[in-house]
Every structure is written in C-alpha cells, then in structure tokens.
Image 1 (cartoon, rainbow, N blue to C red):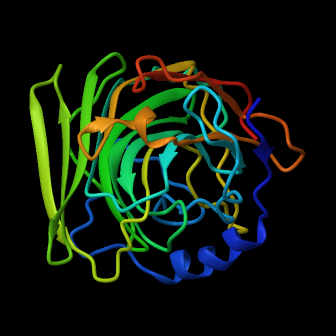
Image 2: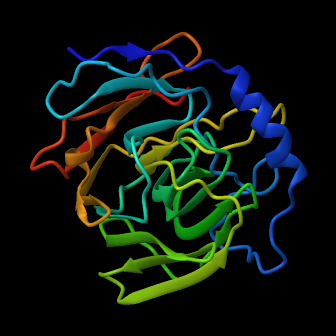
Length: 269
C-alpha cells in the first residue's frame, strides 16, 4: 500500500503572495464564459509542500501517494523533463447555484519548484450553469484564456514541450471542434524537475484560499506521456486532493497501461 503523506498549507500561502502580486499578462483575454471570482485572475498554483522522502517503496508503479489541497492526478518528479502530454474528454459540470471551479491540465514544473508551464481546460459553474474554456499559464504569471469554444464531451489534447533556451511550446487542441492553439513562451529559471497530469481546484478566494471544486463527475484521462513514454514508467507520485480536514475532494484511479486514469469528484471543499 503506498504511503499517503499530508502536504502542509504553509507553503501554499507563501506562494499565494507572489501569485496575487503578479498581474496577468497584457495579452490576457477575458473569455465570454469566464467566471468572475473575488481573487481576480484565476491562478493555477504550484502544489504546496515538499516531495515525499526518498526511498519510499513502489506499489503498482507508484513510488508514493500524496495529499494536496489543490491538485490530484499524477506527477513524475525524479528527473529532468522536456515534455508532457495527455488527452481527456471534457467533463460535464453538474451545477447548483453555487459558483465553483475545476481545471484539467498538463504541465512541467510545480511539484517541487516555483514555476509551472501548463495548458488545459476548465469546467466551472456560475449561476447554475456550466462554463467551459481553454487556457495556458506560465506561473507565476496569470492564466490566459483562449476564446475558442469548448463543450462537455469534447476530446481535448494538450502538451507542453521544452524547446531549449528557456522556451516552452504549449499546445491545446479541441479535436471535436477542430481547433488548435499553439503558444510559445519563454521563462527563465524553470527547473524542469517534474511533469504532471492534473485535476485542480484553482485559486483564489477573497482571503487567498483555494476555490471550491466544481462537480465534474468523472474525468477520463488517457495517453499520459512524459518525455515520450508512459507516465507510469517514471514511478510517478499519485496525488489525492483533500480538504483541511483530510477528506478527499476527489478520488483518483490507478494507472492502466501506465498512462490512463480517471478522477471522480467527491466534494467541493
């Protein structure tokens, strides 16, 4: 049984100061479906806390299991990484009158470093209705929305590739709608010390906390590759999202074929 370890909240609030002090790029566009929230531009945060201790025993290809207040999914974090990619079916939001958020993305860095180079989609809820859109983010800069339409049930492909000389290529495609967005950005100092495929409750409430997780049902993630190989070949960390009481906010399945998994919503916060 993999050891599940608890991530301290202190590191999150240290990075929140940087996140909230950093304005979104001038090129950031407000998507017509973007849900306004009290913290300003949505931030897709680094995972708070530090990696598990070395030498944890592997179980089913998983070297350890972690808890996070804002991430769930899988992370390769034992080498240097140049690419990560995955596909998913855009989850349908089951919405009440409450405003809630959920993000699905791939990225380099963030598990044990202060940047994340990432792209993905959201399923958010506002006014009793779901909202769907794509975005990219070079954290700690703010996320930038794409104006292309996204619907529940669409097949999404996403990848982030390091091109050398501090340059990253972020590609997001909606196969169902037939559009692709390719963004090339530079970021100095990126460690490339991890690669992730993540479901996230993004930031921020008025007090700087994690936003409530939208009910996305079950998200099906497939073909999760790191450096061109199945993420399961990296002895990845499995991450479970929990609230402050240690209750799961979602559940994450084991990897099948080393690269496919699902996550199922449990509670908002």
